[in-house]
Length: 124
Image 1 (tube, rainbow, N blue to C red):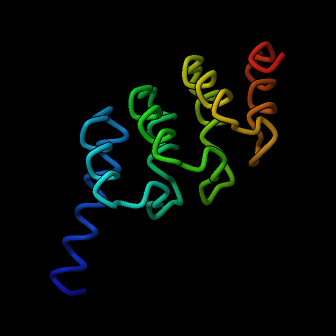
Image 2: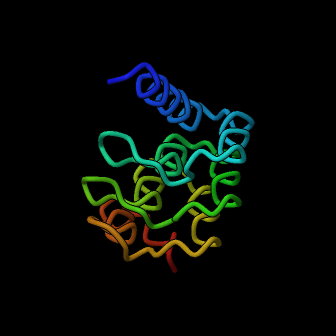
Image 3: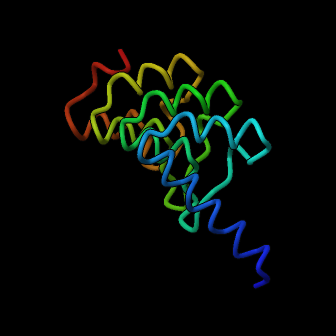
C-alpha cells in the first residue's frame, strides 16, 4: 500500500473508533468534509452499526441526519437496529425506528432479536 492508502486506512479506523466511543463532533466533521457516511470496516460494520451497538445516541443522530442507511447490515447480516436491540439500547431503538429502520431487516431481524431476549414490547 502507498503512504496515501495507509493514511486513508488510519483515518477510517479513527472514524470507526469515534463512532464507537461517542465522538459525535469528530464523526460529524469528517462526514461533512466528505467521509462516506456508510463506509464499512473489515467486518462490514458501518459507523451507524458501531454507534448503535455501543449506545452512542449523539453519533446515531449525526449519522442519520447525514443520510446513513439505517438498514445496512454487516457481513453477519446484522442491522444497526438488531444491534441496538441486542444491547438493550432502547433510546437508540426508538431513534432508528423513527428514522425508518425496518425491524424485519437482517439476520436475525431486530424483531427476532427482541423475541429472543423477551423485549417484544419494543415493536408493539
